[in-house]
Every structure is written in C-alpha cells, then in structure tokens.
Amino acid sequence: MGRIRWTYAALSDTGRVRSGNEDSLFADPAGGVFAVADGMGGHAAGEVASTIATRVIGDRLCSCRRDSSEQIRGSLRAAFAAAGQQIIREARQDPAREGMGTTATVLVLDPEGCYLVGHIGDSRCYLLRDGALRQLTRDHSWVQEQVERGVISREQARFHPQSNIITRALGTDEIPQPDVYEGEARPDDIFLIASDGLTDMLSEREIESILGSESPPGDAAARLVEGANRAGGVDNITVLVVSVEPG
Ligand code: CA
Image (cartoon, rainbow, N blue to C red; front, top):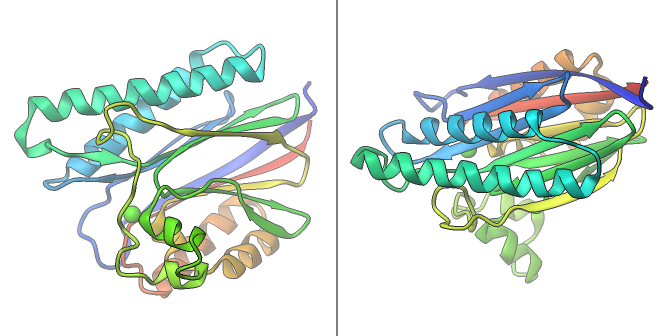
C-alpha cells in the first residue's frame, strides 16, 4: 500500500454552441495517469490531434518506468515530443489536416504521494487544497502574456476576444516545449484538469465552490459541466476530477 490512493471522474461535453467535440481525455486510474487535450484545426482535424495526444501521452506514461521523479519528468517530455511528432506526421499525409494542433495537460500521481504535471497550451490543471483553489499550470496564451505584463486583469482575460490565441501547442511547434511541475499530493487534495470551455465559462471562485462542496468526484464533474453550459456553453467542456485519499 502506498501513502495515497485516488478516485476520479471524467466528463466531456460538446457544449451548447459547437456541433462537434474536439476535446479528448485519457484516464488510467491504476497507472495514476490522467490527461485532457483540446484540439484545433478545420474539418474535425482538431479532434484527430487531441485524440493522438491523449492516446500517445497516456500510453507512454502508463508503460514507462517510474523509479524517480527525474525519470517521470524525462518520460513526460519524451511523451509530449512523440505526440507532437505523430500529429505533424499525420497532418503532412492529409491536406485537410494541415495545421492541426492541440493542447495537452497530463497529471501523473504516484502512490508514495507525489504528483507531476506536464503541460502545453491553455488547458489547465488546478489543485484544491484546504478549500483553496490554485492553478498549477501557466497558460501558453497571448492573453496570459498580457496579464503578466499588467496590461489586463485575470478576469478581463477570460472575456478577451483574443483569448483563443495560444503560443505553444503540440502539432504546430516543431519541437514542443511542455512545462513540467512537481509537488506533494496529500489525502483530501482534489485535482482538476479542464479545457478552456470550462475555465472561460466559470470563474475560479465558482470552480472552487463546486469542487469544495461536491463529493464524490462524479458529482463535482457533473456540476462543473452543468455550470459551464448554464453560463453559455460556447465551447467544448472537458473536466477530469481526481480526489486523493489516504492509502
Ligand atoms: Ca477549447
């Protein structure tokens, strides 16, 4: 037995405006690997890109050795590189898929009580601990750069017309540069991985309140999707909620 174990729930919803769903998700609770990807590109190519990303990254991380966090870090970077290369390869074979790309955010949990997050694009990973929500990832987006320069506020960024411009992605970058974050995972922590169809629709206070008041994770996931749809549901909504328990 490890120090922690976990339960999870995942939901992906088309939303109320789009005709298709270009988000993808991956969950392997036994391996402690959870991922969300949000694809882009015409003719449903976004769906192809996000599916490749979650499948390649998920499969590689489930089968890699995990003796140390350095080893997991290396595997995360290699998995992102492999997914990016495969998306580029498939885009070259089909003109309708030219320029397709995707975000990818993946959480790896270790039973000994550590987490690693690999991230590229503007999907997000949050951690709710002691009732407070913290964004673990930094958006690779134009509006995020404006927030960091003090040009606009975080709240203005949510409603900004250019909020869809992302500055790093798999498929569009020849050599993807994912961020990797690492920390301690404790019992009662709740991790949330979500596409921007959730985070553009709900404020962090609203997300914090839902995650803090709903258990099990399936109820929280359902209420998050319901809330984003009620707020307009203008984009595909994908949420993956992972609840940490004592091992
Ligand atoms: Ca999206």
